[in-house]
Length: 269
Length: 271
Image 1 (cartoon, rainbow over the protein chains, first blue to last red):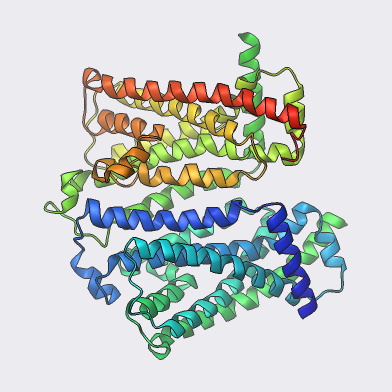
Image 2 (image 1 turned 120 degrees about the vertical axis):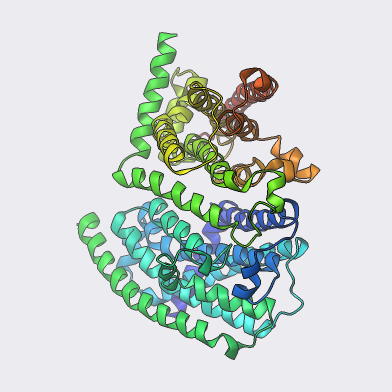
């Protein structure tokens, strides 16, 4: 399995460097940086630093800039992980290599592990750049509980990976990446508490946030960074994330297998 | 002239068929702007609102939904008309770019045809916007019955010119979709889509003046929210016209440069 993972990692890195060196990396970094800029402008220049009374009560801190900047950075990280993993099979289909991938006796687990490892390198770079820019615009990192934050980040990668398997199956089902992924990303940005706390939403919309791994992941990460919370303090969010990961994993593995079969029958005959 | 028209029409039909291969596309066109708009609206929730909010220095609290709605209308309109330009790289991948440039097609007709291909979406969006604004949002103050058609015309012309300009930029490289991110997303922040540019620091104001959408939105808000007369809007209109003229000139010059470059290097399809 590790051989397959290593080979996939090396191949994907080469493809990224040779064929598409800038598009996605720069795109994700800029998206995160724009969220940082929006938060900074709105807070300082438009609202003169005046927050709603409920904000501190809902988030446990009155540090809006750290709240919004971490939201932007973590959202970019989630989108990047979801996109890179879920698009892998449909990209193979488009580039004409899917048949070869499916015909080889390689383990699919190794293939996806290689994909995740490769994209982990990219997302770590993207995330670091956004956080660094955020630090210039008012993100406070002095209270961070580093180990808890790192662990939440790694666990979140796992959760997004599981969600990406379901997204990947849907993409193969619809034979589309653009509409499927962007609809999901738009909904995620709305219901997961990226730029505002979820309780501000109407009550009937709030349950939508519960099915997105981004919501508990972001909540836990913010607590670890802004308030320096230890890992056990965010265990409800971690359990929530683990439960969602398990559900997505089961559906995703089943979906990918089904879609592979369908693609083999409908395309390759 | 007749030939130019038919070329333009052919490109519009081609691009429309290419982009609207399924009904899902119409779904996304309707759903994405709505989700983005409500997300933008709720992004203001953590701030202090009401009559004594610092926001009132720029927009009254009651007009915030209309401010965002006009902002998003302008942005989506631009986005609709310019998204076909970043898909220029698909022409390379499909190998059709070479065929287009070998044929005696007028290059400008090809560029602006691509840009215009989203006209139907633009009309549809504008129609939905007017209905929404009329029934659900307070604070509308029209300059006259002619204000909505004029706003539509301003958006249409400026977006086509901007789309044509982006198309040319995408002629230079296969991996240029990041340019889309560099040029498209800053519009959301700097052009006054979500925040009033008057609130920005000087450096941000300088950036915002580089986007034609800033001028277009200024005009549209004057037309639909402030009930300004034509005479008071003349300076803003002149400014927008000047910016568009600069963009058209840049498009023509860059187009010649791009074709010359591609002919010289012979790599129309690869890079």
